[in-house]
Length: 219
Image (tube, rainbow, N blue to C red; front, side, top):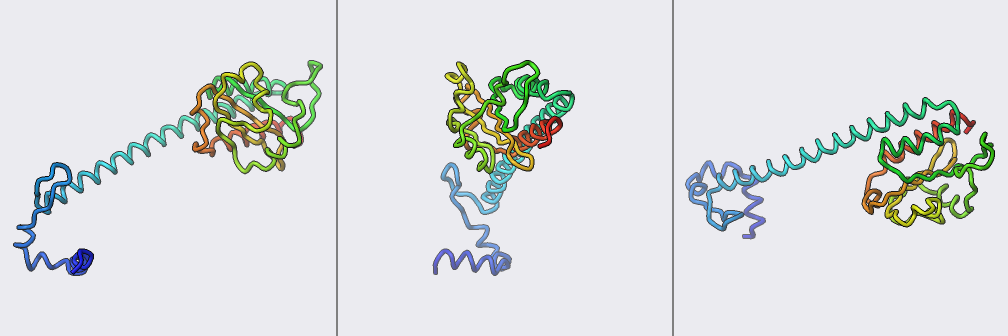
């Protein structure tokens, strides 16, 4: 008889140990940690303690994730309130960088927008400088934000002299009915924007900024 047959028999006949209680009392099982033999009941207690430990670890992970999500949600709310307070597109574009730095601790931000705008200060703002067709095609086809060390096209040049110290980047397409621009955030920390990180809140950030832009343009 194979071990699998014994295991299957005991599953199908739980009354076995009622009829042969002395067998249960005599059985000794190797201890999982120090090699000594223990009874089935002691082995069960050991297994339950290990399962409880694993559940405790999982519970702490869930609590930590929940607290982390609460913090991000609160920051998103603060940004939304700040963006709604601006009365002009130029004020919003200027204030966006300040708020991303203050609220999310992201000091390096670059933005490019597809629509045209005449600056009241005379001269073209960097947000409206043209980009290559190849980069625009990449952004148009992005299904979700990109996070990693290699931004597309010539994006790294958008950061000027700061580009040399940046190790990770996040590219967020801005969309309404169609793609209207691209937000890029850079960090000197290599793990700040890594390929395996979740992008749900980054997607929401893009939607929030695109919605704020729509207040001043028919997008």
